[in-house]
Length: 428
Ligand code: ACO
Image (cartoon, rainbow, N blue to C red; front, side, top):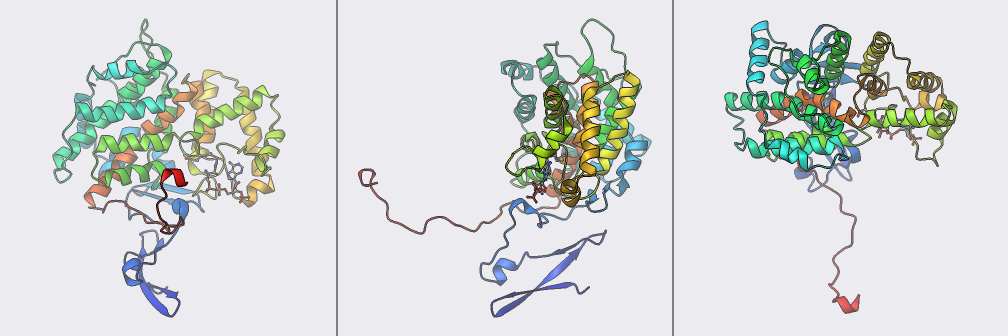
């Protein structure tokens, strides 16, 4: 293939260089398009064909169902690594040695206290507030308690900001859930591993010692790993674009949480469970809901199906489905919701509507079933996703800032009124 793309606009032709990634992905570098063509731009709503950056963090091939962080396959990471190791690899570029991991964890532990005044902010939210709104606000509020902005040219300042948020974010997550459940706000224990500590903070009852179930811990580790990064998705692009204005790390993350909240993105795990519950309450007739999903005059969509980039099985869905089976078996849970989920999956995988459009179950189709088995309230599901995505957002923010990327500022094609005279109010 030539390394030049040719563009013809009317009489004029232009040449643009091609950019090739390490997995042979090809892009046309149009940085010079507007200046060379005297104002022509590209238009691509939803950025379906637009690469916003070059990135060395995550590779995915949606056609083949491949996902890798820093070159490691998601299957191998979910099987052999723990969440903190994966977080380190995403943020710093490679899997840590034992010493590097121990230091990272020890540094995180030293920063795990959250200013007690944050509790006053949490207290001001009504109990009915959605946990994603609370989490986004508390993450933003952390800026007020840690006001110094990060000098990204200082490795030490960058490291400290990363360690701080890796330490405090799980506390905010646990407190958000405990507030909703009416439980006292607690702390974990420095003697525990990163994920074990998260579990203790979330699930410990005030009047009994917390006993950890290793199968649930393993499933949570996997869920967090599988959600840890997904290249330039909606929330990650948000974190990068907010950070590109040189807003701080915590403020950028808070914006990412808001982006993740929507039901077409991270909010899908909550929407899946609500959909399965609704189908169950309506008699469990999966065929009726399959028909609704295919009916173009009906806004209903099969939540947990389809993906912007996966046009094949979402590799994360396969791993999660297996983990869900193990957790339910271990806990002895017979969940009719799971039967409905399995029924929908089987029907969709054999239905020409879904097959032709390459709509497969995505990561969120099964994650909610595990969260439910762990006794996590439905509204907290997307918060769990956010906790998993944290290292990915941090890694992408760091890469963007260290790469000295320019401020994100797309253009538009204006389709409004041409210049017209102002009419005074009594003449309108
Ligand atoms: N149920 C029924 N039909 C669907 C579904 C679905 N879940 N998803 C897509 N389609 C149909 C669309 O109606 C469209 O049909 P058409 O070509 O006849 O008009 C076609 O498939 C393509 O759909 P688009 O919406 O154009 O695909 P897009 O890439 O823009 O959207 C998305 C992807 C948002 C994920 C979509 O599949 C969807 O809404 N899924 C349900 C929500 C969901 O599970 N989101 C989680 C995504 S994973 C994550 O964020 C972690």
